[in-house]
Image 1: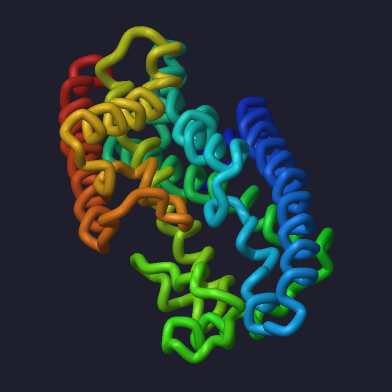
Image 2: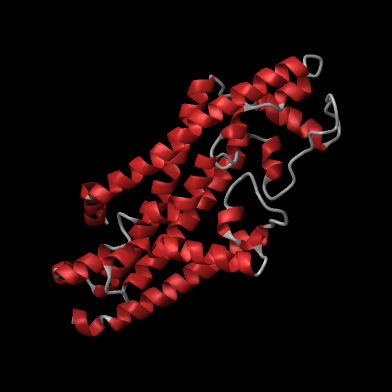
Length: 290
């Protein structure tokens, strides 16, 4: 595993991918801070006599995933491509360069393939997660707010019908995991970020598995994104938007009817197919590697 980390750190695509993801996060922060300042200024003037209404205007609502400006949506659109870039073609490159024979002289075939897919899973998970966590830190630094206890208390009052608001236009968010907002927005968004990281890993593992059957490196690099877009098109075509990861991975829950089942079933299916295809591909290359 240490060897894989060294390759990952020395890979220029690692830094390019991270830089692109982080730039998207910074752009989202810029637009999000502007939107929050405008909303808070307007709300504090309109609802001077309604502190509950003002408490519900919180900067955390503009973290990536919770709000739907262009850059936030773009992060969730492009992540399968960028998190996979540094690792999805690792076996492909070693197979076509002959490096794989040197690797197999130092370890067993089973250990080689296991380490490859496990490292791909871990690296994609953290490559997805770290820019988003940095985004929260930077957003909080810019807005100067870290404690969202007042929001959670007021949100709890809102869902229990106890919040005193200027009108009835503000309603509690309904959907999966929203009960976590009564504890902390941090817990709510981190739940989504971790799930998103798991899906990022699943797409990369699928791409790595399929790479064992491909001859074109360009196609290998884009395979996780192709699978992602294929799911989007497929679920949209049959009207199951709430089963499409592009929709349910965002904490803003942009479509109706999202439940816990799509999170679980989609992930299990992705990892199941990744495992089957990967084992099939490893067996297919046994003659080449012997």
